[in-house]
Figure 1: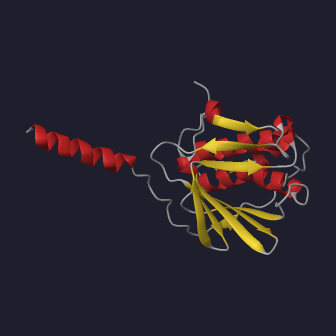
Figure 2: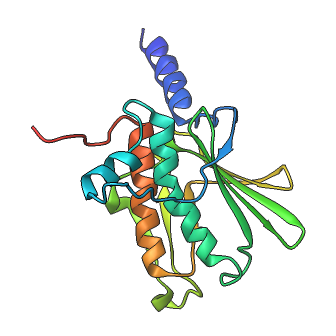
Figure 3: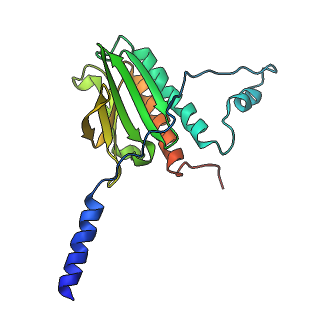
Amino acid sequence: MVKKSIILFVFVSLLLSCTSENPEVVNAAPVGDKVWVKSESGKKTDELKANASSEGEQKEMMSKALQTLQAGYNASKGKVTGVDDVTVLLDDNMNLLIENKSGGMTTTTQANLKSLDTDFKNIEIISDAQGNAYPGFRVKILPGKAKVVVLKNGTKDKELDYLEVILADRADVHHSISALTIAAQIAQNTMPIGVD
């Protein structure tokens, strides 16, 4: 009986220690640039309604949040070493893809939004004041979840326990942290909605 319990314990431990794989990329589409629609009435409430996502449209809400990250990369183009033509994409399986075309190479960073740790205490700020060339942040992966995969020209280069974003401006870093956290919370169904 003790031997069976030990074997079962070892098997379960091995099973839990394995990280899951990222879901297959399906229908990845660029999140696009942030566009603010002005209302004809000029009322702020009408503008908010015109720019709101459709209720229950998870992917649309995540895409709108991730447009802030796209804007940060657009503002960093040519300023941050190695950041050139960056496209932020989202697919049907909630995979975030950051595709950077620079120096004849395409580097794609893939992270599943369900794997990201959305606790602000676990997000590491990379400060340019600490000797780094540019500001940025690292979002850790939740234990046992799919790791971040980095591809170089379509070939897997490495796996990481965090998603790293480097931008040119501190304000863009802070806005992007919030946007990425919101998108991940939507994917994980942990987004606080409404007030009781």
